[in-house]
Image 1: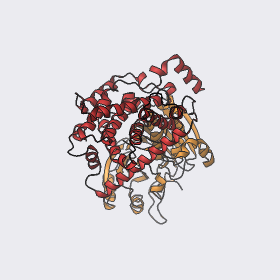
Image 2: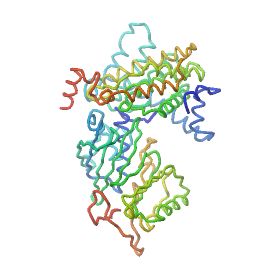
Image 3: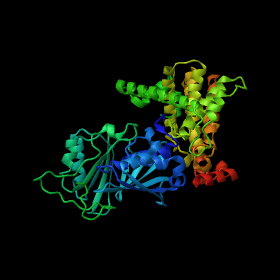
Length: 257
Length: 280
């Protein structure tokens, strides 16, 4: 409760917003080139005054909440070729500080919604239309898979073999036998080989490792890569690559090139 | 850890808060101590930056208050009072300029703790090392409050933010002054009890008016609580019940008074005019 070190002016409107955008950025393998930002409630009312717009932009650029470049985030976005469209909308019965981020990196897109619930604490609760539970206090494994018996067990086995300790686990499907999303918060990032292995598990279509964003260190400093490509090597049995739900175009390769 | 458990600590309340956080792991303990030393440095840095500039915030409503007070004549012949107020505003004006600050517990209330703690320490010529354990206690008090309510103006009103920061600061200053665990927690309770009902009504939704001056007032408030507690005065209502009372008042506050910029000072004629001007 003493911290984070951050640039002002509001822990929930600046630090929290930055963290939500950081998490969203890491749901892509490459930096977003376009972001459609939908602000709800208090975020919509006071976004400019609190610098929420700057903080979200900074987060999308990979800046941590204490990064003084946030103040000039719009200039940095221009330099980085990130275009932003801000809009306000009523997102329904959600926390007053809620934002939906629709990011486009050219060959992949992601659509996430999350809330900044106070003191810089955040909760990302929707990824591509699936209910998730991501606080950013841990490293989070997101897995999109078919709703088939045993998939959760397979994933849990891989985490256990990598000696990952699960802090929270959330799994929700849209309908029986359809697609489902797991969000698993783990004390540390899974090893690359474990992530690579998971890409070969049947019925898994997409996965990402979101970084821990609460400690204040920029996630780029914690991990080597921003994400995990789902990319079977040549000769491997092809894993069906269904269209991503949400904003992705039908037939689009979910894991990027 | 509840406030009652902190108050009952056999030794220092800060030691109990530290052990609660890191368990018996010596590496974790050293990591947290190093982190808090760094927080003290960051707080110092934000105070120094804030006192050195009159640059206005983006809205132009604040930015010069800390420096102006700091350089003003000490009319009351009370250097402690002036120092505490100036430090607190320095941090919040830095915050309003999007400068680097330490949220404690939030950014809008970030000036209260450094105002009170660094202000008192400098007044008494204490080293920064002496501030590390009190800061850990402040964090522990913040955690105990947060366990019972959301610390955000938009959910509990200003009492949740500035009340928490004043309680954290009161406990920290009391420990700095040599108060025992019980005194520290009763200082926190007295500080909290006397912020209940405070609404969050920032003009135009900006964390500037009344937030900057409010941190000056509540850093002094925290020092007052420490003064009473060190003299042995206590809160009649047990500290955890005070937190509960604050949480229940927060739930009773209408949305207009919870950071929407639609009530209180924000809804005055001038407040609305400023908000309109800024929106353009």
